[in-house]
Image (cartoon, rainbow, N blue to C red; front, side, top):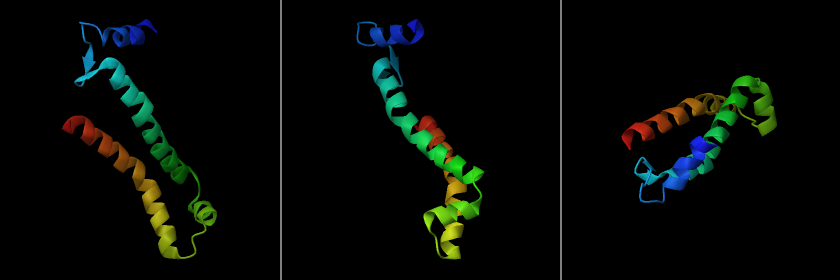
Length: 94
């Protein structure tokens, strides 16, 4: 707790502890409050598509045509990789 609390307390003092140009407390709020929720949702949906048989997913979503079945399968399997690549790109670009 001291490891996380001390930089938070010092981020708004004359010491001005910053991470990526933001005060530490704002950075932790952005990281834990916003990005983690979005990333966990995308990764969770992707894992669900990887672990469930495609027939169950298609039946649960009510896809009638084979084209939609294929699209659900492709998006579900590729979305986690695209999301991780996007996060890495954002990290190194900014």
